Length: 144
Image (tube, rainbow, N blue to C red):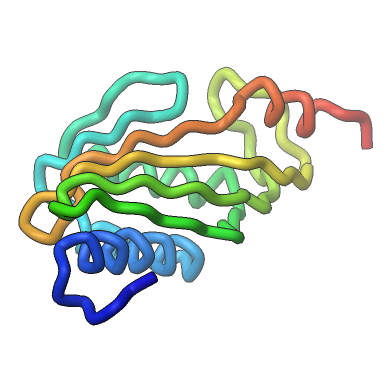
């Protein structure tokens, strides 16, 4: 709960909620405005990518391959506002083949997920995403 926005934890929670609001709007520029130039992005079960340009490329790939909305978002932050976490449920549609994953043909999926954040200078300096890739693959691999 945001009490007055003056506490560091309140500001961190507002930042992460703003990040997800931009995601749900498909506002990639809005998301990029909330991350540091040297943002570290830990892709679920993948490598770490560093920098705003790499993050923008990731968002472009996601936009081409998936249509997603995050629902039931819960955000928590430490008292200093330097770290935050979020839990959510992804409601998505797999639109275009993504490298190394099953073929896409518009499959719908619902998947719980979470993320961890480092916050510096009221910007997101690290985002680490996690979801159950096996569950996602099982959902999109079902026969239509």
